[in-house]
Image 1 (cartoon, rainbow, N blue to C red):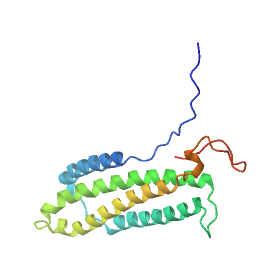
Image 2: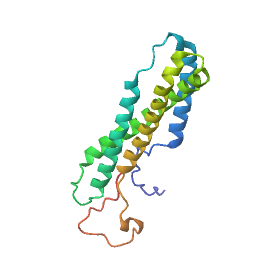
Image 3: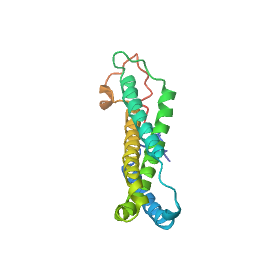
Image 4: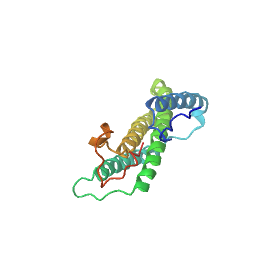
Length: 179
């Protein structure tokens, strides 16, 4: 009885799926709309600070994504990035993409409730611009998280396409790592 050939270890962390983010945002929008339509009259006015904090977090992740990509590609004027730092960035990126999808869904549900009532309720008219900025901020955070996650990937090396090519003696032969 022969044993099957041993498979190389597969990465356990997969790239964030756009469908997962879409379903998360859609489900959150539905739950938010139900909650908001039930309790909106008892809620205080939306604060600006929530939307702006989400926006600043997204901008920060865009900066991290561009900086990390440059450091991984060893562009001129950059220092190599610590692999453990990249692992932390991947966790942050995945959490931010999911968090951005949640905030996007929340603000979509809020806007779905507010837009029809904007002319009738003063409170709704005041919250409408804040909810719109929140929606843009949530989308920004989700996309920034996806871009940071992509920036943390190990770039393909030219010889990775040809496993039978000569092995460079300066490079470890353990195979490509990353997500």
